[in-house]
Image 1 (tube, one colour):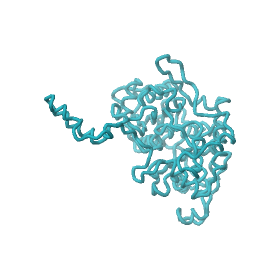
Image 2: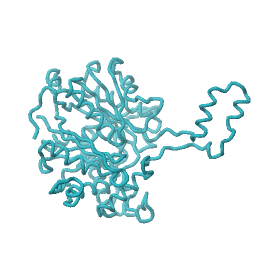
Image 3: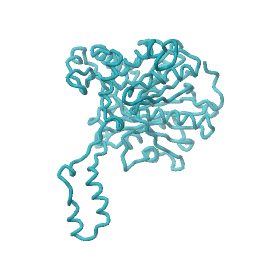
Image 4: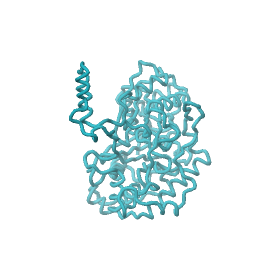
Length: 432
């Protein structure tokens, strides 16, 4: 168990996010930079932080725009953070803003700073679409062209297919497999049925809808003002409060046809959004009059074979942080587990409870334990709230801290899987 905070303990002050929007809807005309700017501005307004006291801005993102390749810096400048504050962007697939948080923790522990803004942003409404490589090579060569005859030769040796646009694929570069196919494979590996996946999807949507209705989610949101009408966006629009098991069970497989079990209904949707959090050293928070709400304790990152265990990272990361802290699942009051797919969540839970998985993959005599569903994602998760790749990690941490207070808990566990077969886990202790 953790000791009392010392001077260099990284503590969570506050956090929030823009309402997540299904891609192609509320933020369709925005860049990731625009959303990052609004999230940072929302954090500054909520906390009353003097932006000149920030030591570092770190922002996670995945699908990068070449115009704002360091989107952290551009967003920070646009949010009014002084140009003397360094900012950098991190990318680690779906755990990019988790990495922003833990990078901030490390800076504080090492004495490199006292005030870190950890954030994330993502648009999937406007992913970069390239021309194909043969045409790219021709266009690169054309920089040296001078005469009309040279420009007329631009299309020489190109086929009609070389002129077609090339959209980015949400697939593993190493395996060529899209994540939904991996989720189907993982569900089959752990015997997770289609019905169980649909039941979990129903649960997460209903939990998210209830949290919207009673205002629990509202406390985490920074309203977004989007041109041209600037009407505020104040609510996540991915949540389906009216979904039923009948509707979910009527959907066909989305990836492995005709017999797959992963559908659009039990998967997270393509989503746009941004998030931001304020982390300080315990000593600085106390001296400057900020209330440290939680201590950010043990964390880890893991990696497995992306072909066999792409989405199983939490089953490896969770026991590592628990063991490092001398804790078990029984000590945890709040769990926020990223929901890439309902089948992925249920497979991770099965792995944690499995004697065989513990022996063969974790080198332990006993399983990690069975997760209490009453403390897991009680406000919904990525399947119901949405999943802007670069922003989800900060959402998980912010929600976990808020839940510790509202559900009268002491310890929270945040965990997530990520493309590339990677995973993350973080332990958070309530203060006060």
